Image (cartoon, rainbow, N blue to C red; front, top):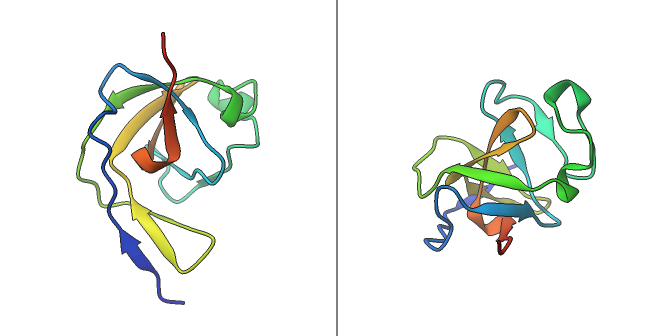
Length: 103
């Protein structure tokens, strides 16, 4: 299958922001980029004791250019542009897949 890779950068998402992942989100583990992570699951080995979608994430880096892309359910995907930390683990994702949590 051929995928159309899209670029989406939300410049309002900044390093230090607290965000939550939204349905349809995808994650790439920084240390194990071939592993798939689903936001409805919890990963105690990674320090994530609640479902990822219910766990706030801290933005570690924003507006980055990255080589990873996230495949969508259709025939397209998005290039990752932010790095977030959830539990004890860092993940690349696309800013399209997060919402800021107001402090």
